[in-house]
Image (cartoon, rainbow, N blue to C red; front, side, top):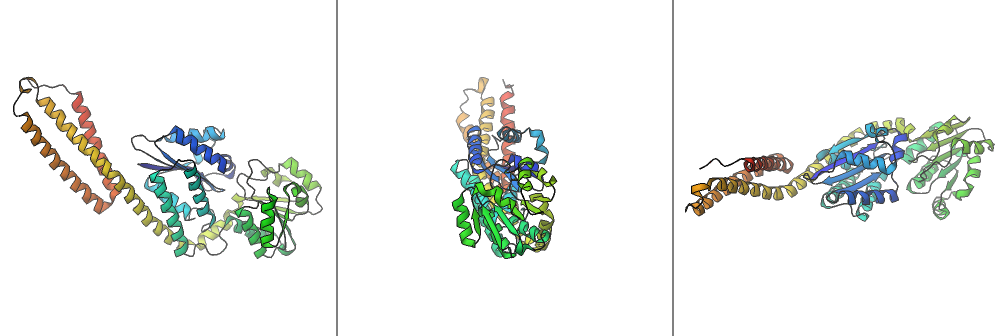
Length: 435
């Protein structure tokens, strides 16, 4: 089997590109079903978060999924010309693909190293793939390996200590930019997991006036009651923004909540001067050009990079420990994958050896030798030779597996199978020259 991941993230692509290729849950299910129907022999999972969009695939080496076809699929699904995003894509194959998923799930590839949300996002990605019936034995094993590794990294290191979430870093930015947070009126747009984290972090830094707004007012009320803050209805958002000092947005919407033109009307009705907006939604909730409005300071997830860099530097030792855990677990997974492949490949090799022996016997028993009485004896002798040669090959494959791992052993068997295929094809093309 071949495994690959094709994607882009906060390091490879600007937010303007990333948000155009983002998938919500409904789109993810739709895309996976389309891929499943298009490539029936392959397995797929799709991870889309505020920091990345990644498509994982496992396919047969004999029926590989072409990378160009996947890029074309992304282009067609989102109606975006491939030249707009192709240069920002990265591709990891086989062992590197497995290592990438384990690194992502362990939060070592996150904008905020150590964030706890990513493992939940990867689990949701896997749940959707199972719902779409787009996974199989290989991706099932790989994702469960990733979950175990992520848990191991978080429990055996101190990587998750401190403010280690996008929400936490967003609030850290608020604290740096706002002189007196205790007297500020803060509005949080979105009451999902990220919105609730924002409320928790705002409370920790001493913000006493917090209002949470969500499309589902019941959800906003539930979060508000739990944390002793206030909640407002979605339709009351313009009025709340008129009185806000700080707005942090993380609502899951496909289009901007506000463009520069529609937001100007809110600004015109404001009594307060300065407004700080931190938009950590992907796709974004506020049109970037809103930053051009006087007295409005708009920050996006791209602007959190400085604090994120400080976070990564403070966790260098934990990152090194985590990567060692990932290295060992990737090796274990690749050993499983190699062992899974070797058995059928040995069977293919035996078939090719037998095919070669039969071809040579057929070439020998022509003309006056066609009715030779020794045919049965010679066929038996050749069969014994083939079995002994195959036994020698298997012994060497076992040796390679013990010394270098099953992945290298699988590569060796695959190489011999390909050479045997070439010999059989060559033999079929030759004319017999015997009398």
